[in-house]
Image (cartoon, rainbow, N blue to C red):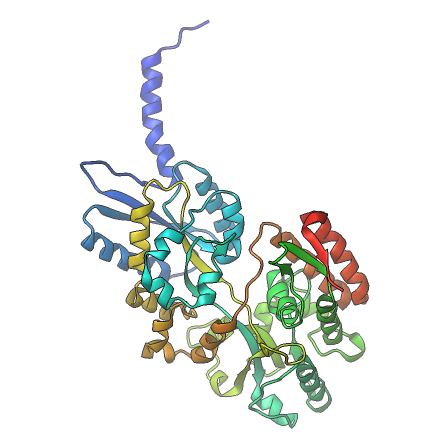
Length: 455
């Protein structure tokens, strides 16, 4: 057996260590003779301009000018959304994790449960600007198990887009605000009778459209009933209820083949339904009503995927009503992104100083305006450039009463079962049977002790 020579092996290991550290992406270092380096990780995808990078370059310059003992290293992760989650997850597991990470608010709970994030309550309580300026809903969305784990950089909301020209042809008011689900269905049925060659309404539904079906479709209905998907008082999932059945009945009504109000299945049950709706059917005047997100209008901008100069005069906006118009009368849901401090950051205090600087009114305001994001800060609303963005006063007002998906690890799996139940009723299954199958699936996912049924 050959004798191993220790010194050459040590030399090789010494060379490998810096390479391994570089792979981790973080250089959160500092010593008595030099500054602390804070690494900021975020997603970068698609063609430039990269507004996230621009924002953080401005923040880096501001931080380093004011704090000679802090250096900021930017770590753009080049990946689509799904791959970004995977790459960030791998980074957060290492001892060399980035200090500050961009988190989808929808996954904060999962990452907290995995031990990846730092509770930020003590930091945020010492920052009066946060308590005063972030909308209460935007403070709540990053809260999990009564602790806050992030600062929102922007959000989105959902409402009803409708074509005024089609409404006029159908004899409907071009300034329209439905007060109940029945008002929406009545308008759609009127359009079907009176305007040929037009799809009366779109409600995202089914497995192929994934979270768009759950959030823009099902939850915009369910949250307008007396029931909900998760009971925060008992900490249990609600697997069956009158509200859940009523929401499935609404889906069944829209996609009833005997009186079809929605798109045909070749459109609705396609992974490209979102692009077809936004970039073809609406600009071509072939869809009357669309329950959709605040970002939709970006498709029709001069530099959008489907430029449509007439959009501003053609498309109207309405709030989504509750089922019967009961308080709070209207419904919307929000998602969006936040920045959090990694649990394994060795320099959390300095990381929070970097977040404070980046989220100042001027820097965050510029970022939200460039990205057409609904701002989480009240004072940015007053900026003329923000108010000049199409429909932004309307959408920002919805932030005051917005709601969120339950941010628990089981949610992504339960979301798939919601989409499955929706698709079942589209294909002829009764809402009762679809709800029964959904209920059994939720028990299998969350456990019987974490599930309850409402009458």
